[in-house]
Image (cartoon, rainbow, N blue to C red):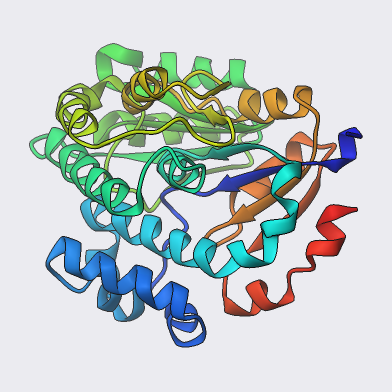
Length: 319
């Protein structure tokens, strides 16, 4: 198969949520409606209503954000999948950014939807509870190199102060995370270092840092309680920046993902080295395709809503 013929499926994580997401899907596709209805039944409250009408404050609580994004993205995928059936032999990898990795694993058949939903709900609750007594968050630094961001972190006090690099998203974009005071200090220092932008993100916890250690312990328990299968396509995991297929290795990578950085640039590079020339992002907003554009060298497509499902040209993807 020619390099340009290989396709990767990618899925966004926290930060792509918004009030109203998925409402058009629910009205347009029975497959999507079934996903939302099943989620409401499993969780015991109307996640559907939270997605469609908010309030935003509740939607942005990570314990709700994670199942909301997971469910909306899976609703999109269920509506889209029949249109991509003929392309399945061309799909070389799946990958998701942070939370999106659980969607990738579900799409790839490693997890059932209902099990993945329970896992991400516990993950969100555990991450929120891990820092309940010590507020924290995340922020994007744009326009500095990885090395310059490392200097910013060091000047802000580093691990001792509770601040780390959390996501290596694209050349010139690194997300940092940590305790509130250290994060604010780092943002000020980044501006002194001439960062183009240094902005807090709509994430209520410091993901992908050692502050998530207790959350990883709770996640480990729930990961062992659900059945796993070998995925039909390799999933490139954030913590390893490498394709995995064995359930035991995938579970360990999901635990490491909570406390170590998302290696997104390296993950994309691994897919390119595996022959990928095209990427399709599926999620409430096109986030990771924008990051991949900065890495370069790939044809990018995205589907974010009902209109996008209808408009996607599978023949164009196949070329």
